[in-house]
Image (tube, rainbow, N blue to C red):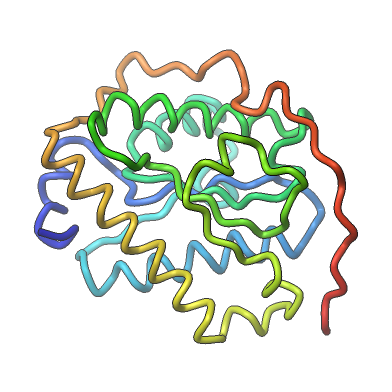
Length: 213
């Protein structure tokens, strides 16, 4: 079974997005570029599997008149999976919402995927931290940190396509498990948790990698 077969069930159950992109909003264009390229590639790849692939990224998903927290919560709760663009700033207290998004999807995974040895969070390491938070280290993360030094050229490489294929395979696995468990979103009373998943985390900053033009 694959996401192609269960996609209609996902829509009928109330899932709106195949993936939610969680990332730290900073002036670091490397990170914002990564989030946008990842979104585009996931949608392109899913287009060969489902009729209407949808990936939520809050740069384009929230309009001015929206209730920001309500819109963000609704999108996260109605997402099949979450891809986290991880950097040291992702875990920083200044970016508390990243930690709340992680904690939210961790809690939703516990309810929706009981008995499975995986969760609905897919970490992509854009920059490594020393050490990684335990919440990240114990998951099967995908490391892009060395390759992002290539700049935008990296997103045209076979290696990037291979990494994104791994993401698609995990989304597929999560989607199939949701259908098998008959796990519907149930977002009517959704509330963000009060504490970040990285509340007590402290990282040692790493040297900034040299980026090729």
